[in-house]
Amino acid sequence: MDKFIIEEFSFYKVFLYGRKALGHQTDYSVQITIPSGKVFLYFCKNFMKDNYVDDSNPKKEFHVFLRADKYPAYIDILRNEKPLFFYYNFDQDMMYITTTDEPVGEAELSGE
Image (cartoon, rainbow, N blue to C red; front, side, top):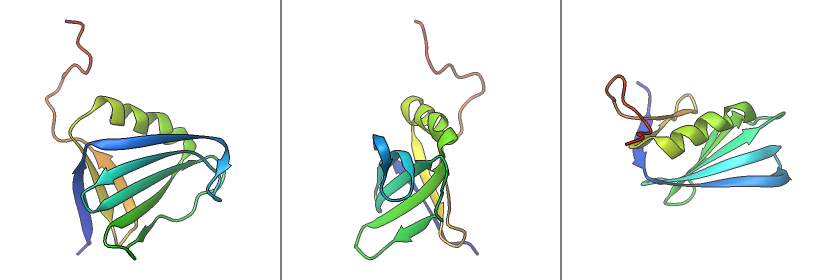
């Protein structure tokens, strides 16, 4: 059986770097605060490390490496959806961000 967490979050920060940063070719990053710790999403153009979790402190740090071309999709969901949930599978070091079930045809931006 897979070991995983799924936690709702409401806050995030965006980082845009003038140069490649953090020693792993990161162009952009997003930091998300979840109840059990912090999530660091690193968007990289050329080099990606394997995802990992640092649980050496009481609050975990989830380090996730993604392709830079995924950045606009992540920013779009962070800006336009709620509630949002962070999922992480510890056995596979895999993550995703998800919404809850929504009705078909829900208008995101209403002109009314």
